[in-house]
Length: 92
Image (cartoon, rainbow, N blue to C red):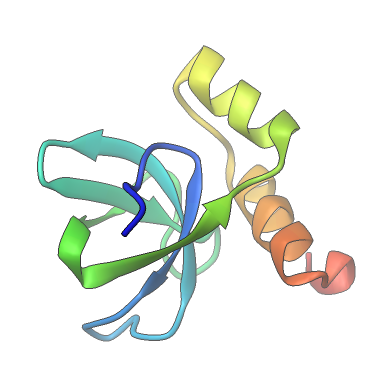
């Protein structure tokens, strides 16, 4: 199984957000901080154990670079990255 890191897109496997795609905005040991830019905003990311998500892949390069350089993204950047991943660029 692939290891999940910052700027990866994951699928939630448990909890109220089960089945939702989210972006990993930070890591805290065995926990990931997840946001989707709508219900779970960048200002208050969801703290979830690694075993409760499934890694789907890396986000686009522009978003990854911005997150790794600045350490933060705004909500529209997160929504755009998830829309690019799903192929739904009109979803913003």
